[in-house]
Amino acid sequence: MSLKGRLKWQCRRGARELDEILEKYLDEYFEAASAEEQSAFIELLKCEDAQLLHYFLSERGAADAKNLSGIVQKIKLPRPVAR
Image 1 (cartoon, rainbow, N blue to C red):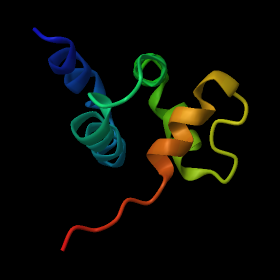
Image 2 (image 1 turned 120 degrees about the horizontal axis):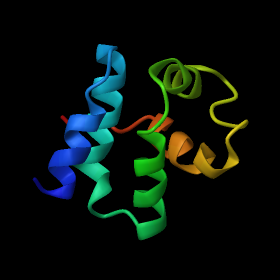
Image 3 (image 1 turned 120 degrees about the vertical axis):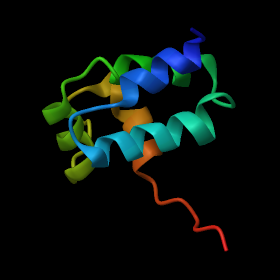
């Protein structure tokens, strides 16, 4: 299985909201990301669902996990809607 295939499997979480957030980043931005950003995303996938929900839904984001704050902020940014 390819790296992207393994990551896609890891993006499948207990909450559909997390599935959508993580898979969207993987499908649309992961391949073009820097090696550092890709590593941060892989590290993010190791977090528990409750922690990920806190990161994505709270105002503080991942301020308590400085090594993940950049990738969390990038994923949280609103994306333009395709028309």
